[in-house]
Every structure is written in C-alpha cells, then in structure tokens.
Amino acid sequence: MKTTFWKTYRNWAILLVFAFLVASCATVTTITTTDTNVHSSTKHLDRHINAVLKREGLEPSRQTTDAEFLRRVYLDMTGTIPTPAEVLDFVGDGSANKRSKKINELIGSQESIDYWALLWVNWLIGRRGDGDDQRIGLTGWVREALETNMPYNLFVKELVAADGEVRKNGAGNYVLRYETSPVYLTSHTSRLFLGLPMQCAECHDHKTEKWLQEDFYSIAAFFTGIESEEKEEYQGMDIIGNSKMMQNFLITNSPKERMASYEFDGTRETVPPRFLDSAEEYKGELTKKREALAEWMTAKTNPYFSKAIVNRVWKHFMGRAFVEPVDGFGEEYPATNPELLAWLAEDFVIHGYDLQHLMRTILNSQTYQRSSETNKSNEDDEIYYSHAYMKPLSADQFFYSMLQATGFEELQQRKAGGQLKKVEIENMKREHLRRFIFLLDNGEMEEIEAFNGTVPQALMMINGSLVNNSASYKERGSFVNYVLDNWRDTIDRVQFIYLTVLSRKPTSKEQTYFQRYLDRSLYRDKDLAYEDLYWVLLNSAEFSLNH
Image 1: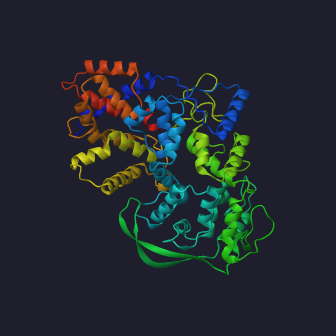
Image 2: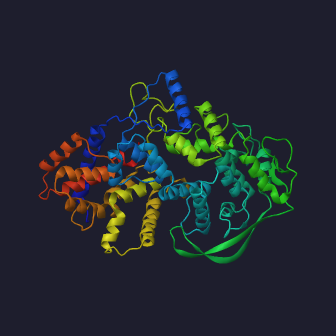
Image 3: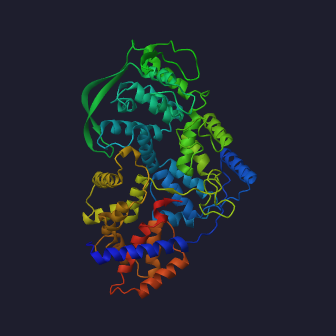
C-alpha cells in the first residue's frame, strides 16, 4: 500500500487520539476462578505473599479476567498472543479448573518447547545467527532436554562438563561458544547458573562483594585444559529443518593442566582449582575437573544454585525478580522476599529440580494471576507483588505476536495459492525477524531484549511492509480485507479486530466510539476507518506490553 505525505500525518493524528481512547476507555470485569487441583506448593506461595501484603497494609489487586490471563500465559509460555478462536474457546469454557488445565496444556505443547528452547539458547550463548553451527547444535540439545523434562541439575551438569563429539553431544556447543576459555566460562557459568557477579573479580577484587580475584581464578582452574579438535563435517539440520553441512568438534580434557594464572600487582600468580566454599584445593583427576565443578555447582548444599534459577524463572513470569539484577546475588542487592525465595528454591529441590513443577507452582498462583490494575493502597508497590507488574514484550514476543496479529502466514499462503511448505514459511519469518532485530540493534545484538518503542520502530510499525500488507483493505488476502469480506456488521468486524490484536472483545464504550468515528469520518470510502482502527490497536501500549 502506498503511503502519501498527507496520509502519514493522518495516521499519526488518528494514532494519538485512538491510543488515548483505547487506554482510557478499557474496562474490565472481575472473574474469580477456583481450581481445586492447585498444588500445595502454589498454596504455600500465595499464603506467604498474602501474609506479607497484610503486614505491609497492601490490598491485592483483583484477579485477571479470563481474557487477560490467557494473553499473559500465552506470552509467557509460548512467546506469542493467542488466536481469536483460542480466546473465545477459553472465555466460553465454564469449567472451574480451566486455568490449571490450560497451564498444563501449554507447558507440554510444542509451541512452549520451541519458545523456551529459544530463551535458554539466548541465555546460554546469546543471540546469534540461525545459521551458526553452535546455535543449531545447542538448540537441538536444549529442545530435547525440555521435551523430556530433564532435571535442571542434570541439565547444568551436562553443559558444564560436556565432552566428546558435538555431533553426538550437542551440549558441547556451550563450551565451544566461549572458545573453551577458562575466563569466559567462569564469568558466564557463575552468572547464569549461580547468579553471582564473579566477572567483576576477573581483573581485581570485587568492589562490593566478598569475591577476590583469587576466587575467580580458582574456579577458572577447573576450566583449564579443555581441548577442541576439528573433525570432518556431518549432515545435519538447521533450526527450522533445512539440510545443512555442519562442522564437528571433539572436546577433550587435558590430563596435565591444573593451574590458572592471573596478574596481581604486576606479578603473575597461579592458583589451583578450588570451590568457593572451601579452603582446600581440588586434588582429583584432572580430566574430571569439570565434572567435579558441575557436581559442586548443582549440589543441594550449594546456597546459590537453586535460588538462581528460581529467581530467573520468577522474573520471567512476574516481571521483577526477587534479586535484581538476576546475576546480582550478594550483599549489594538483597532479596526483596528472602523467605519465599528460599522456600521456592527448597521446594524446587524437593521436587527433583523439576522446571515444569516450578512453572506450575507460579502460574497457578493467585499472585501470578493478579491484574496489573492497581488500587490506592498498592499503586506504589514495586516489590511485594500485590499486583502484576507490566513489562515490555521481549523482541521475540513482540515480533511473533505481530506475525500472529497481522495474519502473516495466512497472507503468504493466500498469495502463493496455498502452495508454500512449512519450511518456506519459517524461512520467511526468520528473514523478517533478522530485519526486525537489526532495526532494534544498539550495536550489541546480545543486549536486545525488549521492544522499547523508539521512533524508527514506531515508523516501522506504521509504514512497514508487514503492517501495510495486512492493513490494506483493498489487497486480496490481507487481514483487513479478510475481515471486511467475512463480516458485514460493524460490531462483528470490530470485535474480530480486537480479538486478533488485543486478545479481548472491545468494551461497549470502545464499540460506540468507533461507530461514531465511522459515521463522522470524511472518508468517501468508509472502509478506510477499519485500517485506522487496526493500525491504532497494533501501535497501542496494550499490544506492546505484557500486562
């Protein structure tokens, strides 16, 4: 669709008016759902939070409506918004335990496995090109671990101690990503798996925590002696199923290298491998050093391991971690709810380091299912979880929700006469995602997390091909064209647009406002008003936030 100078300004003006009205007119209905099958862990979580709220004099916000809950849990578990049919089916389901059933359904779904594999690979090695061999190999391994619900302690052990051919053991791609460097691996494993800001002690003693430079290198000594040898290539599959020749590596451990060395006050110091909670050096087999480190990291007695992952998963679901930043465990950043963090970590261990159990515990709670709408008593609460904390969609959540809302896949199939294969559609999505991430890039691709609504991004949303192709009511197969062709009544058209973009029905006030806008518009062709509505909703805060 061609964009003229005057129409661009028309779009901006309409966007500002509508965005205000959508935000100010939205109303909600309280729906209480009782699930008699909620796990005892969830009940304990809620009892703790509610006791704290009572102590602090905070009235909790209402529970989410079914539509609000569904959108939130889909974004958190699958990385995208639900379809209109999924919203209507869920809202229309009168069963008392439908929320817990939906949680169970999503946790075991392929969409959830794919999304959490993406999250884990980004946490493990950062955002790298989909054609990167290490990302491909690691993604396959992570996906299989999630499908089998591998206990988290075993998951970490296999990553930290991985050896052998990466063709057979994809976990080895984690070590390769950091070039088998003791320094890189110490910095990353301590941050991700223990929540410790050890990287600050690489060059000097930590300024605010107890970690010394010697402590950092005593852990680095466990990673010395890792050797990687290039082997012949092998036939593999990329992330979306394309055949690809991939480089194979053999990872082994030297039986000779024991020490790590560093500069201190102008002199070269050497340290043996030593665990952080011990004054004794490790004296076991040198080829088994990383196995020993992995055992120590994941031990029940390690005060950081289970708390670090609970803290990270809690932040993903709740918008704010107990300890912020998530790798800031120590005296500088004390936990906001230390008793609950400790209990959740203990419960996680008791249940066999089961990540799915941890997810169910949080997702089924009243705490997770509270509305982001505040009241007078809790409007300033930022640490006690009396209401949901709104959070920007991640770059991936925003992009895939935009694909869902624009009907991208259906549009491409209609253009191709329904002849596109699944792998072709996925390749098209990946190319659009690459361009989208490039637009968000601030120079460090690994740092891109949230869609923050800058001017170039807003212009992309308003005038970009994805939105324009789906918004043009004259283009056969576009979303707006599909709506106009399949519904005749204004109320039905507006309802479907709202369900598609915002995952809810419009309020009566919103419906009335649009009807007035439609009647009073100066367009000779009134169908243009539906393009305006669609653009405004896609550009609204309600779409770009997880609330």
